[in-house]
Length: 62
Image: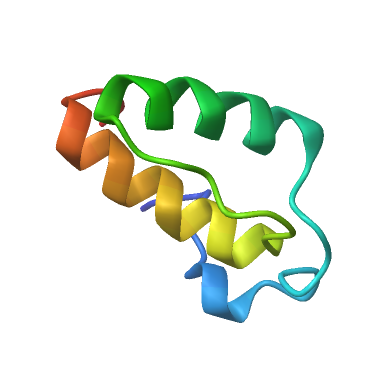
């Protein structure tokens, strides 16, 4: 039994809040490696989705 299932970012109750400092920092690192720019003023959900995409592109993360 999975005691800590991952919630879909779309289901986050705080997902529409601005991205966190750690999200922004990690996004900037990933974006630099991927040769992409990080858009300004992302929400937590948008940042999470972009992190997932950039992790796939760079081979980082999961």
